[in-house]
Image 1 (cartoon, rainbow, N blue to C red):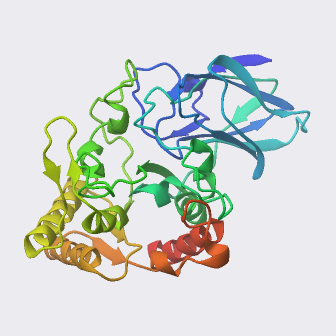
Image 2: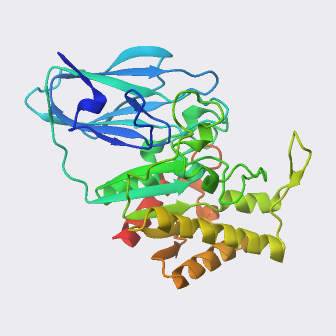
Image 3: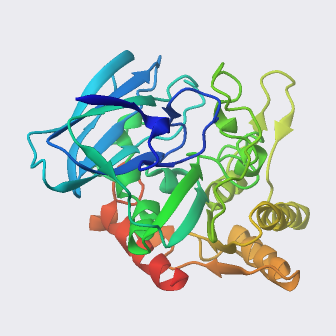
Length: 357
């Protein structure tokens, strides 16, 4: 058995934002993953993890088989990925973070430190594309794998490995990364909290955790080293909820915040989305931009379409797409917590693959 630092293996492909000065591979965002190809009979991985209230979950996939989904034990431990396989066969392994970063428990990011095996690592096939997905709970995979009857908001309801982002990337043979947070929007969260917007944290490694994840480098500026050829933005559903919700009252200042459905409010939202598209183009200059909406009508959908039209007029390669309205996902297509299930994610991915081809 030989032991390798995961960062010292050129054959291992790491996907997901993290601070390069940190030890190992910190897995902050949903869908952060390590991929490798090796001929071996056994593989073990060393993971360090700490959490207080929100357990992160990982999945081990071996040759396309979901070997296990589990929450790492707090502390530093070795975990068996596979055992007693044919040593003369090349086995493809995916280690995927199923859960998103949690504001309420900023230390809950597992880190892969080392790999231990009796075999040999091989170069992976080259990826054909790179895609970045930006979104909310649907992009994080909330509720995707569970039954309709399960409505607890806990980490085990998330399933990044079975959501449309993963399926789309697989369909296009693409490397991908995800920036998503349940309840957040382009302008505010579903309950009108102004801090709950993705553009605010997009330029940081993992700004969702910046107020409590000490010594993890999450608050640092991101270097945009992952240059995608496509950026898919799937925001808007929570902004739509905010328009229908009561104002958010700041617990410190007592100030009220509300995205209102007035001409001024709609113009403010349109400008926010337009400016975010401009910024995405600035930091990802070679990428085609796609605003993926799960709302086909109403003020937010209209604002999104106007923002995309303005960005197109400004010379950006951008498309507005709404293959499915969220309300159309019913019956067998639904998962837990009133969110799309695996069948719905498959439909979304099929439509996206067709669009992005």
